[in-house]
Length: 75
Image 1 (cartoon, rainbow, N blue to C red):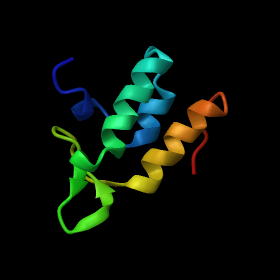
Image 2: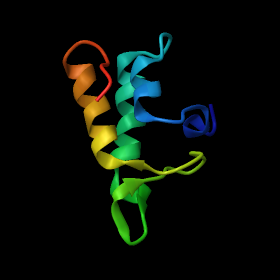
Image 3: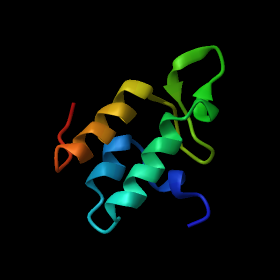
Image 4: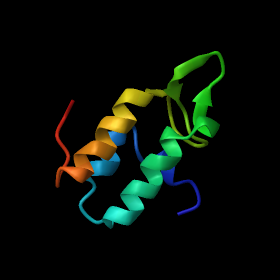
């Protein structure tokens, strides 16, 4: 998967994906949360390369926390 972000519209799409291993979900979401994906002059938004649109970093962190709880739940 060369542009894994382009397949997902929202972080919870990653967290809910049935065939991704938890480690892969965490890696994808961690890349979304990274400052490298921050939108210039809008630090609360993230847009990884290939992603269709920016998302709030709070949504990315909520998706990561959902993995710790054992399953994704909508914010």
